[in-house]
Image 1 (cartoon, rainbow, N blue to C red):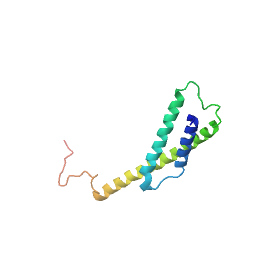
Image 2: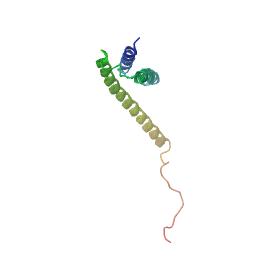
Image 3: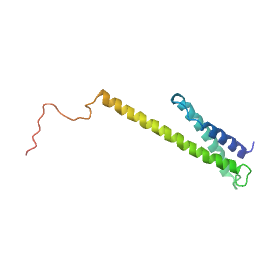
Length: 119
């Protein structure tokens, strides 16, 4: 199989994989599969970069590859934003839980102690 056809195939699989964002329970497997596709795609791109001339330019699949690349970048940004929002929500819930368990943790008062401010 031609490397450009292989790149097109892996890019199409990644694009299809990124079309639907998973439920919370399936997120780890989703991210792992996305990472595998990105690794495969990166290896092919690195091999193509080693060649003297860029074989993608002027190739019949060039337009499809560029469109897929734009779509992949857009969908990766959406996935990254969703994961970042989930991480922020998790951190917020941890903070809320800590405040619920010990509401006076942030108060620094020493009971029964008097400090004289005069010199």
